[in-house]
Length: 307
Figure: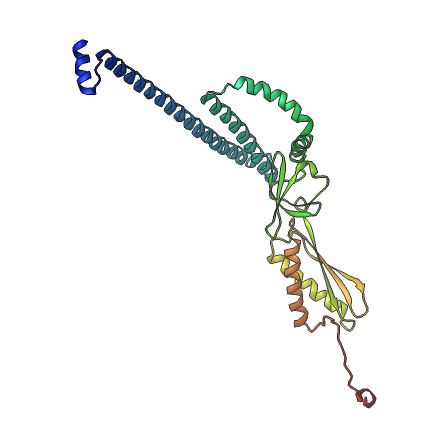
């Protein structure tokens, strides 16, 4: 040992051989401890990555299973409503995501050495305290479940809530998301939903009012209109029953108003009305039936007396 100390002393320049050996042993211990610490940190990082990847994989697999389950339900002979099926499928996916993400966070905290016991115990007390101040959140969640299970509306429906009208994109646990036809997205807390108008549950009614002049032949006009809408119904899949020309709806100062009605698929009445107005205008022009419009007659000074 003395010879080794002398050689180390010669190499390191230290005169005391025992001091040299002590420093050498300490350096080796420090290196080994640092290496073990690095290995421990590396193992922790690997475990965290594995936990995260597994959580994403679980969510993805669960999402596919839910999708397959919903598709099987749609093909069932019991004929489940596809709107309701899509809505419940998205709700189940959201719940699974929340639960898996919560468990993932707890597992990651445990891996970094945080004791979860006090956290979970404190969460119960904190949850009790927050509960008194989070009544609106609880109300949103409960209302959301009632909306889904009572089938008030579903994903894909066109609805109106207060001043907001649009297509339902998502019914979440807390909020409902609507997209208007001009592109705006509205997030409405479920607890604030008091009254809903659903335009997608039943068939809609297209109403077209046509004005003709008093000089026009009413019977001829009704016949032209009926033939026109009958031809439209044959080539328009959005019209579900034979359109009807009801006859004279009203009489104005310079016009007679005839009304046409057509039962359409849900929320397709506006599209049918536009096409019907265009086709009726063409046919009235082709048959020489006048559509009245305001006219202005201007007299120049002296002309009226001459007339």
